[in-house]
Each structure stands twice: as C-alpha cells, then as structure tokens.
Length: 156
Image (cartoon, rainbow, N blue to C red; front, side, top):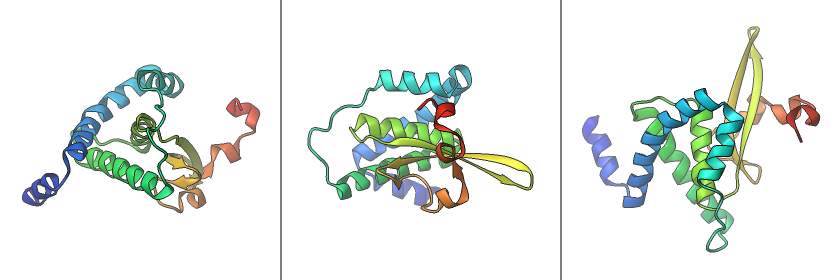
C-alpha cells in the first residue's frame, strides 16, 4: 500500500505536490483557528490573508471544473491520509480558500438533517450551483440552511 501511494505521489505534477503538501499543513491550522476564532471570524481572516484575485484569463466552465476538481481531490487526499483527519467544514474552508486564491468564486454551503432524533450538520463547496467537493446528491440528503432559516436570520 505504501508503495502504491508513493507511486501515486510521484505521478503528481510539482504544483499538485505543492498543493497536497500545503493542504496537509493547513488543515490542522484551519482546525485550530476554527476553534479559536469561530467560523465567521476565520472566514474573514482567510479572506484578508488571501483575498480573491481576479483571474489572469477567463477560464471556461470545463477549465474551472478541472481546476476545482484537482483542488478538491488533493485537499481530500490530505484530509484522509495526513496527520489530521479533517471534517467537512475544515476541508470546505480550505477548498474555498484555494479556489479563491485561484480567482474562482465559490460558496461554502451548510446543510442539516435529523436522523433518529439527532441533528446532523454538513458543509460543502459550490461553484455556480455545482457541488464541487461532495456527492451531487448532498442537497437531497441535507436541507440547506439558506432554505431552512429565514433570510433575516442568515444576515442576508
């Protein structure tokens, strides 16, 4: 298994290796910052640390989805195989931030559901209404907070 993972790592481009390494380092930091600052403040800090840059060129939809797919895949690999096993919110924050740095405007979405009297929450990233880092059926499994709460409660 280790040899297979090493072979896969060697198959990555230098930029993919860098993004994987950054993800592995940043996921625990995102976790710690989330604990210390809370979601709203961390989101603002991440926005200021790496504000959205305008794209050097206009990417086509397929180019944008390819780039977003690469980012989400590498963040997911780092979350699953790194020292820290990140939750959906931590992964979504990092995916959103990397996309933003690349000039791809996306949104972090939140959903809830009740199973056996237990409230479950989930987070994922969308671009132009397309789910990037989760199953395409996630909206069917979770009611989005935008739909569950009145706009006044969301500060919209």
